[in-house]
Amino acid sequence: QAEDGIRDYKVTGVQTCALPIFNAFLEAGDIFAPESAKRLKEHVYAAGNSSAPMDAYTAFRGRPPQVDALLEKRGLLAT
Image 1: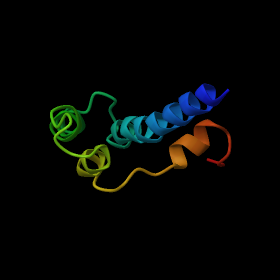
Image 2: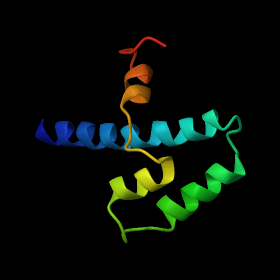
Image 3: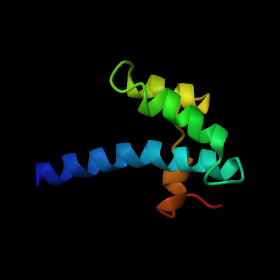
Image 4: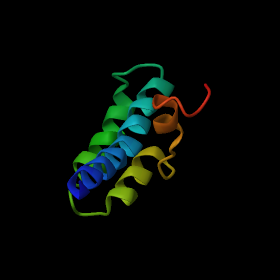
């Protein structure tokens, strides 16, 4: 039972960052936006474990992650 809770917590954490990352591409008007892809690669993928995940995400997006996309996906926020 506790393992299920831990797994759900980890999945929620990943979704809290993954959905806003995808939204960065949507906001750019192109899911293959080269500038967004370059920033994602530079600040998140290439950073590896050299910086805290929150710092890497914030460098990519220019702000900390927002939970709005996750709440919207789960039907808890009106669009």
